[in-house]
Length: 453
Image 1 (cartoon, rainbow, N blue to C red):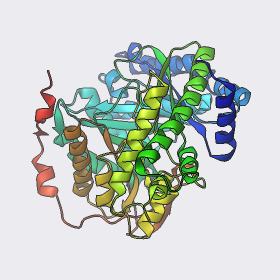
Image 2: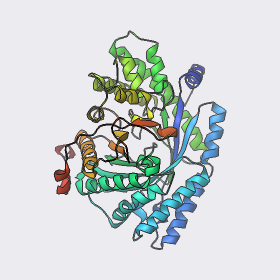
Image 3: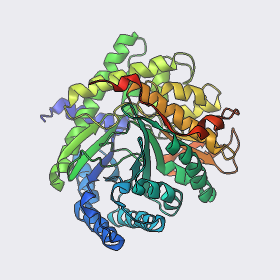
Image 4: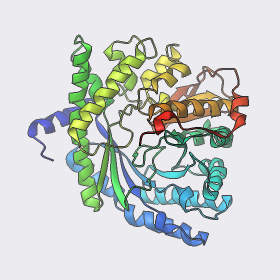
């Protein structure tokens, strides 16, 4: 990549004044060769392999950050979905493996390790069943382990037996971490159409189509996009799109440059650039505020989906022009607890759960970091998962659910999660039950869109 002096100066301004950062440098590591019928051997192999590949990840990222002046906020690891190597391991052994992953992450100094995962969109292997049973305890006794479950794809349909089970798993995980406002659920994502190279947590895993090790980068710049739009308050929507495209082009160039430098220094291939705009609780670092700058009085009002579609499309176009290696999720995250504008929209009554669902039709992922009352039923949670999976399945896109039933809470309460996870108002849930449908089980068949050959 040839970086000009004008791009360097623009990047410096974006870092110093507009919250530009590399949100995450994530090392993907294959653990397929760690499988062993002897659990103790497998457990040790997993520890040794991750330590071997990632021993310099944190130090290298920090040195690169220091040299080039672009903050790298998170250093993370993604691994082969653990269910694929469990074999005949017991639930107790699977929990022990989660503790090993947690200890490994702490020793390496990385923020999270993702891939305590299972892909069950068409059925469950013995390892899948074991992992799902282990999830509530594993997530409640670890700090840095993240989990995900794929319950549907456009090609296979939706595994409603798994969807039903996950309603109970989420409730159990929340109850086990009652004193931390159900925080275990913040580390669990339920997917439709998951991608194999996602660098963002909690849904990252190192897919079967990936190589031995890779560096994937997630760069984020809501503040940069917001400030660019503020400099042009009266342009038409076509020009709004153009401003976003040009801004994201610069963000992507900076992110790929840093990512390639980290990969080169670590001696592993560079994988992809994830273009997702990911907000934080920092001032003016909000996706919702971009939508409001486009012209909404408050996010959630009529026109929100159109504004989000415009922004998401412009992000993809700008990024695709800047890099030939765009991957991951690449769109716009709308996590409620991590976005001050989203929080304000719910508190003011402009943004509802139904509107958030509708927004996921045109954004990157799905219902993300949403707090609901502790008395929500497992069937209602399964219904939310099924709805999001259906949106992803029909539209051939990734959708996900990361919802937190906060024990003892009620609608309107403000829940503090702390750190990057922020805070969230408890949002209202439809009082009518989908339990009969959820209990039918079976599989929702793949849609006509699956017949593409």
